[in-house]
Image (cartoon, rainbow, N blue to C red; front, side, top):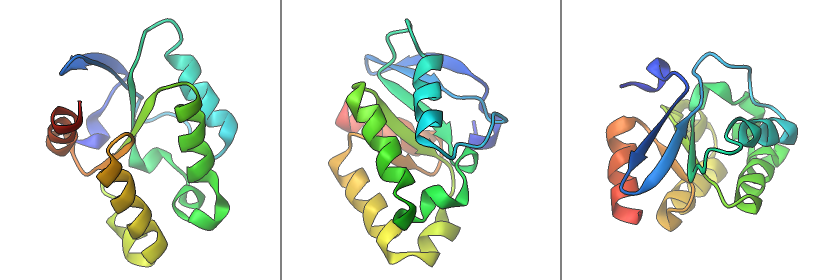
Length: 128
């Protein structure tokens, strides 16, 4: 399954309850959008929220906007992991800071950036 084929669904992988946000949902551009995403999972005992990379506005990938940091912090506050699923190579090529942020995020493994479903599953199995 590619990131652009995701429909809202839940799955369990390695004991983690995953929530796949819809592909064609509204653009995610504010801290309130993070709370709205969390609200979609209310009462579902979700461990990980997976969002297609293209749902985030370009400002999300411009770290100077602080949106990515605020978004990840909201998820952290609610003890939910965030996975951004899809190709963000254009954004990474344009920003060394973003490249470093993605690398460090993936190294720590709590929140993740994954290019595709196979990479997502591999990273979740390794980190648990």
